[in-house]
Image (cartoon, rainbow, N blue to C red; front, side, top):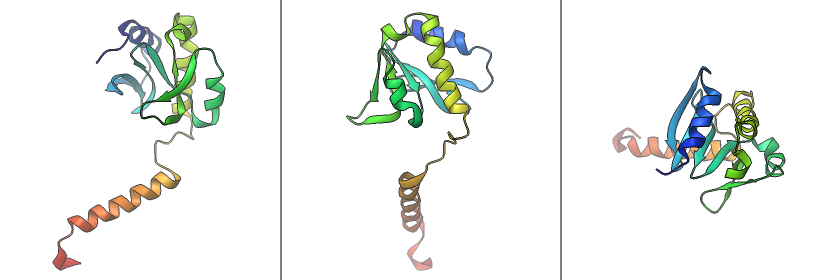
Length: 137
């Protein structure tokens, strides 16, 4: 797993002492979680930021920010900030604060909504049906 260790150390310094903060290897890099939900991380030389779907376009308008795209499809609500955009702690701190505020907000419940919730419900019903012995159906 190759990521910028110095950037990770700077994030650690910013979030040190905050309750509920943990780290987890994720996305081929390192993610920082608040109460189990990712709020920021490091992937290669880039900072990953959870900007929230409502403020996604606002985050993209900031210097050195671009859509977070792993699979060829951008992830709404997440952005990458290039190394030049988080070169100093003064430049990094607002991104970390923004992303932790998104995770603390009531709109970030972590539960699936809408179409994703429906897909999960359907797949769990199918799984239960497959696991149920035929003579009990």
